[in-house]
Structures are given as structure tokens and as C-alpha cells.
Image 1 (cartoon, rainbow, N blue to C red):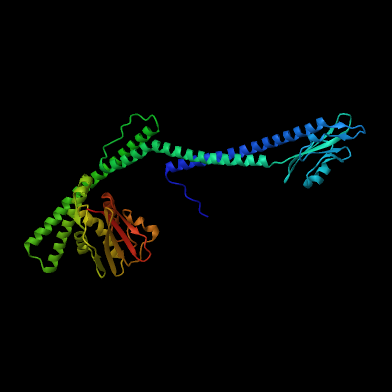
Image 2: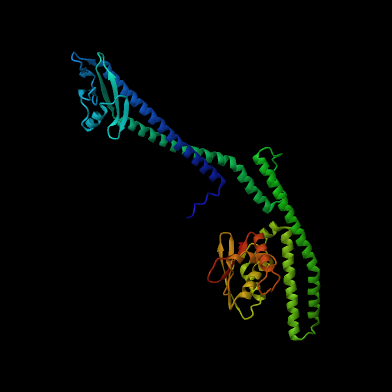
Length: 437
């Protein structure tokens, strides 16, 4: 059996909790009201019965022969008077209660009973003026009192329902006003973390919950800014250190090519070295610019999806496998080198594990382009769908440094996209989401 999940919104939790507590309180109040009304009803009925019995007793006298005499003017419906022998001397008991009246006619103590169909019955022994004794039996129907109790229950339940609705509405209004600053602060902090890491909340010293939250968010933003600055410095230093050997490699390759003294096969190898150095240099330059000025690079740069996939396909080592690219052109909102660097590791990974074929398609969504890379390989286990993007995680064969997919996801997420494994039981599908230009 699955229990329903509680609402995730803190505001909804408060509203439901308030409504629930109010509803329980009103139900308990309705229960208390019914118990109190039941006791009051029994007390009122007993008092009415006793008053009617006292009126009969006060009018009873002893006749000349010692018999019990009761004036007929005091005998209401349901009132019966019996002598000390249990013989009916006055009144007319209801037909349905005649036997019950006869059983109570000989009691020697005051007796009160509740009959399911005929209400409450009082049997009260007495001694009239002159010494004659007897028992007066009086009954009172409970339907009017029960109707009043039902009406009170309905009124209580309706009042409880309206009170619960009113409490929920008040809680909703109060929490909306109370939590609105928190929502604004969270949205503002998220916007600052993406565009301006130097801004902070200026609410003074923490003296309440909101200012304490603002101080905590300021500390969090400071830690995020410090981590990003450290990462940017590391990226800049690495890019600077890699540029020198890459420039040397490319320069030497270009000098060798200019001599035009190499045989054909060696010439092609050196040309590939030069081209690979140029691609790596362009990628490092793009990564360095992105690390230094991410927001401006993303908003100001565009590239062609078709050109990106063409470069990826040209430099991918297909081997014996087939790479099919079936996409329509679209503009991507990031530099060409970064787009190639985000897509290329995914395609190369698919070619490495595919049996025979890799298929690349794309479709546009709201504000983004989704690139699908499908292969007919063994697939990715569900428990590995996130682990394969961890830096340093390699395939079972140990090939590669385990950075390709990690860098691809990092670049995609930096520009507002993502790289993930799609849940597909038929084939292996990677989804690369990049911003639309």
C-alpha cells in the first residue's frame, strides 16, 4: 500500500496543517457539544417527568374507604396511577407500554428508565394525604429533544466546515504574504548566482528569521563566488600552460609542411597533427573566454547546428561503424568550438560502444535544441546513467581518461543546457540540450 506523498510546498504544508488541526478541533467540539446536549436533555426530561409526577402526587387524596383518589384533571396522556397492590386506579397507560407499566407499578423506589421506542419513563412511589399509597408512572417522548440535538449537530458541523475553510483561507493569505519575501530572495539569489556574483542582500544585522535567511544566503553566495573564481583561475592557468606546447606543436608541424619534403602518408599524418592542434587551441581559447566572461560569451555567440555536427562527424573516428546525421539546420546560442566540444565526446563514446551504427537527430524545443545520439550498443545500466559523467570514470576496457563526457556535460550546463542518458530500453540514447540561438 502506497501512502500519498505530502505536498512539497512549505506553504501548502502550512495550509493543510492549519486546515487539518482546525477540522479536528471542530470535530472534537462537535463531540463535546453532543455529549453536553445529551446530558442537558436527560436532565431536562427528568425534570419534566418529576414535575408531572409531583403535580399528580400533590392532587392525590385518600377516599372514605381508604382507596387512592386522583382527580382526572391532573392526568395527562401517558400518566397512570397504581395503588399499593399494583392495581390501576387512575389514568390510561399507552397500549404498547401496559405490560411495562404493570411491572413498574410495584416498585418501592424512584425508578427512571429509557425505552427505545417510547422515550423516558418515571415510576415514583408516594403516600397521599390520608395515608393511601401508590405509584405514579409518567412517560415523556424524546423525539423533540433528539430533533434539537440533530439540529445542533448539523449547525455545529456546518460551522466547523466554514471555520475550517476560513482558517485555510487565512493561512493561505498569511503564508503568501509572509513567505513572499523568501521567494523573492531565493529567485534574486538564483539570478545573481548566474549573472552577478558580487551582489549581496543588504538587510543589516540579522534580527529576525528573514534577515537571518538573507545573511545565510549572503554567505552561500560568497562561497559560490569564491568557488567559481577559483575554478576560473585554475582553468585560466591550465589553458595558459597548454597553449605554449600546443603552439609549439602546431608551429613545428606547419614548418615541416612548408618544407614539402615528406612522403604522401607522412604528409597526411603531419597535416592531421596540425589540424588537431588547431582544434585543441580553439577549444582551449573558447573555454578560457567562457571561464573569464561566461554571460557575455553565451549571449553574444551563435553557431550553426549543421556546421557543428559536420565538424563532429569529420573528426570522429568511425572505424567500421556507420555514423548517420539526419538534422535540419538551426542556430545554437553558444560558440562553435564549445558546441563541438559538448557534442563530440558523446558521439565518439557512442561510436566506441556501438555494434554497427550511430544515428544523430535533433529537434527544437522551447528555447533549446535537443540533439539525440542513438547507438545499437549494449546500453547503459540505470545505476550507471549518472556515474558515467563523473570525471575520471572510464569504460570497462580502460580506454580514455574519463573526462570526455564530464567535460561535455559541464560545457552544456554552463550555457544552460545539459547532457544526459535518456531512459530507453531499445537502444542507448544520449540527449544533448543546448540553448537556441
